[in-house]
Length: 105
Image: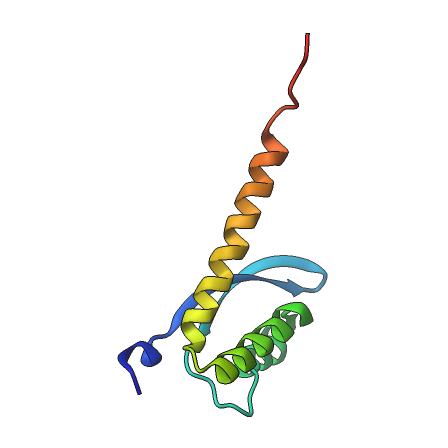
């Protein structure tokens, strides 16, 4: 096992508590192949806080986990790349939303 595989990454994702959206921290390490990477975190949030992580997030992490197995790449590195791309896209979209339209005179 490479030292890289022992890392635990931290990401913020949206979670819903009684219809209210709140960003929470999730931790991604080296999950067992038979488990969704955040299965236990999602169960804890459901059982103790009454919250739900969106299915899109859960399914996306499962897909990344499968891709990491198929291509023999680090799951953590794949997650870092995916979350960086999402953050970049969000930042660009936010910037576009804030940029006033070009005014031709």
